[in-house]
Image (tube, rainbow over all chains, first blue to last red; front, side):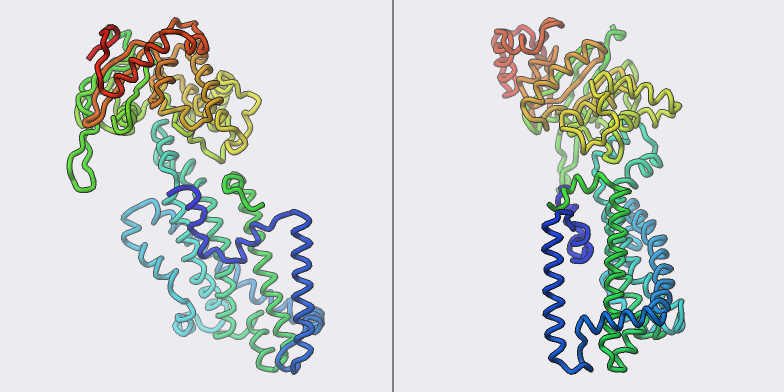
Length: 279
Length: 266
């Protein structure tokens, strides 16, 4: 497969979100267009929502007001903190398990034959189906949320790492071989650096998955955190508070994805220039 | 006699099994020698096994039968007596030019200071001191291949093995690199074996050209193409000998015999 295909391979799952953020161009004109787009959308939403029963929808102005009051009385910060802890725990666990798992499957045929199918199945399966059994195993608190985030995320990270190992150029390995580098030196100096961009792709996709994971957990198990705020607001016909929480979730996901992109650029600056980025 | 030999290829055959399990003779009974400080080109049409032959000398493939000796030592896998230059340079993209040149020295377990000094010498030899701290994506194709050559030279090998080293470059850069290779050869006196499908390049650079023909891959002839050592590449290109040898080599590559038998063995 060519380098071009490699770049495109994970794209089917690289969500609009992650790829868009990564390719966000710095040109002033583009920013202006983006800002105009946001304004137009907000105006349409505002005008439309004012025509509707306030029990069913809230205009941006009302959402903003609700958001400010929720920040003011501490509701939002408490909810974010409550969600953030299991989120980060699950996400970090997914990295700790997913990356080595992907490296092993990619590097060793036996491991691939033994558990490759499991990772593919886990990736393809809708994790929401496991919610009832997770509640049985992990109860209704912190643990079930972290477990949900982890299982949602770990397969995406493992599969991207695995894919990255498989696409380490054979000739680069040969460079190691002809210069008499040991297997461990080939792994540490050639394979792992080559795989970093794929790992980072996995981490970026993982953010989106992890957000879904935490929301599912907070909807269906212990109602709490930002997900809990959404459920409560929905049940009590307060769309302004509901949308405020959704906006917070959205902002958090965008910020985290952007952060991963930033780390990626620091760790693998060569990758961006090879791929060309978007102009 | 053997003191004078840098590379000795004796009766090398290579048999692959194809998808259907049939035997494919990539190389059959290939024998040739390369003297110290000689530049030898391996050329031939695609499928003649020239790259397989080079990979056997590199130690990346094992011959089905026959032996290869470099500096009197049988080849088994990699070895510090051979420096390898890849077709597309194949640099590690996350390393600077200098750190790439150091790669081969690291595997040797040299102390850092010695490594750095040897890499700096090699980088200077290819005229890239100014760009030593740039990464591959900040270098042109020609500069990347210079780094590739420096990486191979840094380990101070007896033989430089190059797999179509300039084929990925544009015509102008290629000509410049060809002249540079002759200069490096003059300064270091390294034995060089390179694979090329380019008739002109083979005649211009090599002292002798080993031509292979396919099905099965075998040596068809060895053409003596040596110009005087100090003849510049432009003088070579403009000379009557160049046209003559070029013609002869074309005949050989297409599996024909040359009329006048001078320079042809096998």
